[in-house]
Image 1 (cartoon, rainbow, N blue to C red):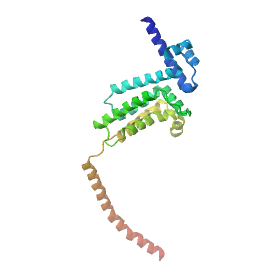
Image 2: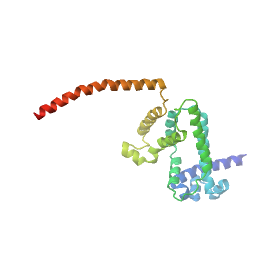
Image 3: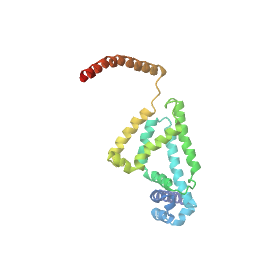
Image 4: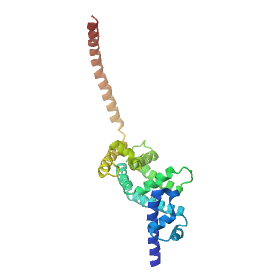
Length: 238
């Protein structure tokens, strides 16, 4: 039993070290000997525990997806706005995961993503979460759940993925607590507007009538102003 606990702790150390190495160098650039040094273990333990570098990469991703899936399940009633704000905070606290995604995007060898099927399953679970929210009336009925998730990922990750753009636009570093406070407030603002309920048909008709009425009230003003303009022009010619 003690031996199993020691092995589990070794696995945890290796995975923590691997995440740092993968974030720093990507999957292709990461070296198992460097991971072993970070974890303070013999390199052979990596292959004993995970079979290969790809097996280790897969284990790191799977652990993250498992933790995030458990969080989603525990907050099944969470609204979209809260998920944006909490998701951004989680991204700030785990930049390594974002860096791993960036390295994958830069890999132009078009190889199959590690743990691709597991990732698709995890993503579809998130889509299903928002589909249920729409069915329960917590999202507008015409929203596309997949595109909503994509927008959510963009809003949570963009300031961190392109810190130079954030700095150029706002003059602030994305890890600056003041920027994070402002961006979180903005996420609340945009989330509330993006996912507000569509107006009832009666309200919409009322607004349309108000608009028509406003247009009718403005029309005589334009008519009354027109002769004034003409008189001014005639006077200028004479």
